[in-house]
Image 1 (tube, rainbow, N blue to C red):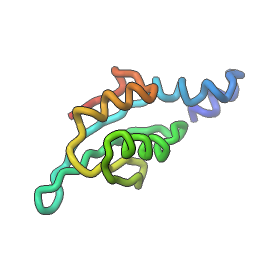
Image 2: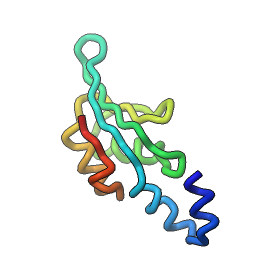
Image 3: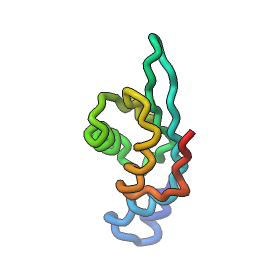
Length: 100
């Protein structure tokens, strides 16, 4: 939907992802799994953003394992303190990130 609007507006493709990142509503939360292990879940990405690439960048910068499935990023460990700041460096606005 956002892509159709951006295409009809005549904006260059290079700006599409930048504009889409500003309009996201991202939720970062930690869930306790089996045996007391924590998993940080980052969700709320629009289809116009390459969340799989963002997942790869987060895993590299946090030096942790994780996966991208069902439209959300799962990182091994409790990384809530760091994920918000890293998403800001990747171009997301501070107001669009909700850390719980």
